[in-house]
Length: 254
Image (cartoon, rainbow, N blue to C red; front, side, top):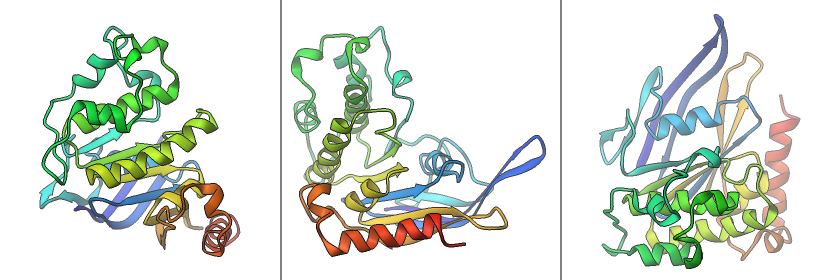
């Protein structure tokens, strides 16, 4: 289990306090999806960087199986938002994936490179090409494949559909659900999109800045992808009520 315990984060710019996240605590189980949603500037990407060991909090700790995560750590992979800088242009697509340290482990004890390619729907004909020929959505798939091949147990995705088309958004929903079901990984999705956050996640954490500039996370039970897609979910009272509750909290409650 990935655990954040009473994380406090302060960031200053030119002597002025710009970010103050207080008492962040939550647990992310294997085989589940959680999401963090909030407006720009509330520290979502900072939280993701701390959970993946790229940044250290001012206080509190992140642990995985009783090991403190305070530096990049193999069981936790971070899929960055800036996909254009996420691959090595001089390597083929296949080599970009296989550059990961190859030690995959899932709930059954094994899965192969071929299985990963299949689940992520990466066409075999592009594996020998260089990534400058790929779309943004294909590069995101390469990032996820590399993470899985490294043997990670948790994947943190920072705005994975930002600047990408609606088709990849729909594809990614299917991919993340498949990863959880087939490989038993834990997924943390950082997003601006309320519908994605609700539909996919078992746990939804809404980051919001209070009047005194302190950021807190409020927990909601997610929709847990009970329907095949968002279109079907939108037809349910549960989904509509949850969307309304989170939307009003984000934009109208003080």
